View 1 (cartoon, protein in one colour):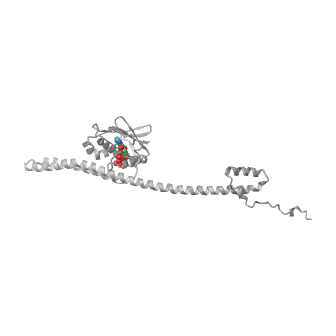
View 2 (tube, helix red, strand yellow; view 1 turned 90 degrees about the vertical axis):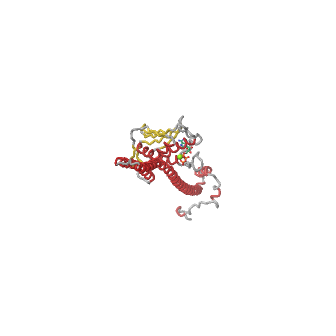
View 3 (cartoon, rainbow, N blue to C red; view 1 turned 120 degrees about the vertical axis):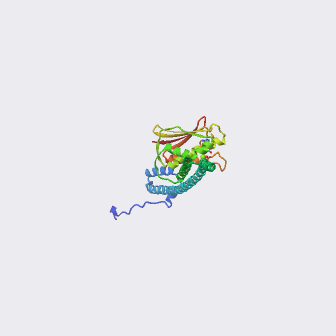
Length: 317
Ligand SMILES: Nc1ncnc2c1ncn2[C@@H]1O[C@H](COP(=O)(O)OP(=O)(O)OP(=O)(O)O)[C@@H](O)[C@H]1O
Ligand SMILES: [Mg+2]
């Protein structure tokens, strides 16, 4: 008889025919219970079965999660692309709208010097007939025509600069920028009896894209102009005031047009929110203005005062 213990055949661990079958219907909590039970009982061999079940379930969950993540990433990419395309479209629309408005402004701005030039040439013809044309007369006339033409060239240059894509960031003065916008719109605004008051004397410098800042100012004063006209307001004033306070640059733009309609005030910086008729507004002006404010590192806000809308651009110093 062989008594050598080392030669005793290993104890055979008997597995059930369908070991997972007895556990697979359990939920996770019950599985954990089964693990505890088997750890303290003679069924230790079941531990690896249970572990396998856990791993299977973990793997299945992990696969589900991976799929979900992939789907989410794809969906996010699609949404981001849609967002980018919409933004491009808005930018293009805003540019076209601004260009149309600026063309109107330039036409207004040119009307007066063109009239003046036309009058001067009529006068020259008459005065020549009556023999009043002297050397001094011609010198003065030449000076006057030069002034008118220079005014037209300045307007044209401002207009061209405005739409020339300048991506570079640089330091620019708020006061000078506001004045250059006013140079473009002044005649049209005066004709519509709108007075723009720039209250600040001290120049303040901002770092960013100058043309975009001009665009923002133009959007806001054009909205005020529309509100004055829609509501047939008599007292038409726009106040622009800029200053430094609490480590921020503030640019306040107030009007006396009665304020933003309350049903849209919370949404006016979103795209395509407008109270204007078809063809009169696309609802993109303030959306673009907010984008510009954010590119300058700041933000744009609005509230109504008892007189009208009050927009504030704030840029941390
Ligand atoms: N100064 C203001 N006074 C009263 N309402 C205003 C003023 N500025 C803006 N709003 C309101 O906010 C809305 C959104 O302005 P926004 O400039 O974004 O679009 P819009 O002027 O309607 O169209 P767009 O600028 O694209 O031509 C306007 O339709 C108007 O109802
Ligand atoms: Mg607008």
